[in-house]
Length: 331
Ligand code: TYM
Image 1: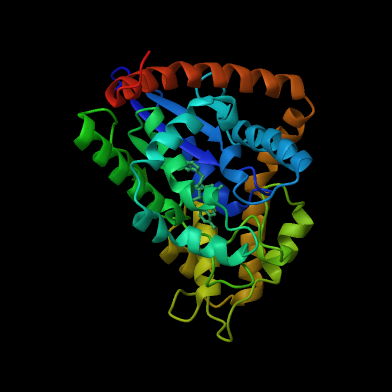
Image 2: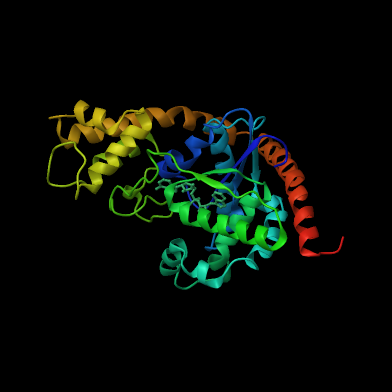
């Protein structure tokens, strides 16, 4: 809508050390969009404070998340990489969209239900209105495509509903975004409880493989992954652990599940787990090396943030002036 290019937007919370779920479900796919798109990738620190954070850790993880974006292949010259709280229009549009989001809609969000169960001592209003801030992130840039893991699909649907509602009341204002959810690697499950999502805030370290884990730790975690009493490397019902390991293997190698089953036919779980660990270690090695180099240069990361925030604010201003006019705000 700004020009004839399609706009891509996504965000990651700096709320924990990122996992291979974040990598395979989201960041790896951020690099898949063609040169003729306009791409915004945000470190969503405003979202992170819906759960209590230690300030020094939040600051460190904000740098780290930005460094990981670059280390995973996002060139700051070609992508707008920025930190959400450095562009105040996110909070401003977030408030406005709160007034176009229904209590009932927010009450149905499964992430709200999960997080309020996990943080029963801090069910704050921000946790509840989290999805309208997320809608603001997306709608601010007139986004066409939002690459996310499947766990964010419900939030995306809400963002579409809010955009449509605003457009119906005030006339065409926002582009209605589409989710982009890759076929493989879209929901990586916990290695210890393969019925639940691999989550960066999981207190059980064996359940989570982090992008920055040492090779030994990665191998150990895969070797300890919970499976079942069968020994055939094949997908099936009641085989959540193996199903998950097969999808991780496929996501890292680009092979299909059928090819993987054939490759490990008759080989047993032990060998397969080690193979999954190895492909993971070798895919992450270049990312980890580049990450270490970037983290040693804070000044560079700060210059990327500053430039990114300026570019993002420029486009955000365009949308905000339209929104203000439509709402009847003066000036
Ligand atoms: P967050 O920080 O929880 O996760 C970042 C991205 O990683 C994906 N993801 C996964 N994919 C596959 N398997 C998993 N186990 C897994 N865990 C996480 C998520 O789907 C996400 O794409 N609300 C968002 C952040 C956000 C955002 C936005 C995203 C804020 N504003 C605007 C897109 C557009 C979140 O909590 O992501």
